Image (cartoon, rainbow, N blue to C red):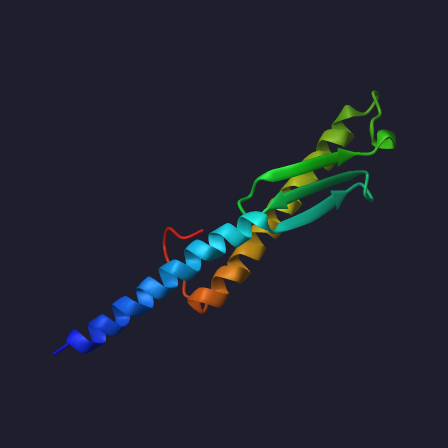
Length: 105
């Protein structure tokens, strides 16, 4: 009774799995950038939420105010990771149609 529908659903699931595997590879190559302190700190992250680079302009380094530099780094890193997560969610929505699938990204 459900045979035809089940086969069709399995084909759709397999297609989605292939598309997600390809997407995971593509996302690893995509990057996002965030800055803090008016560009004094710049961070680049990829779609796997890995930091790829961190740049600190020399004028941001004040031995008398290390806490400010730490705050700028944290702000830039957190923003880059947030942007990365948003990018992944947007890319996943293209495949899943916005369907939330537990355990994926």
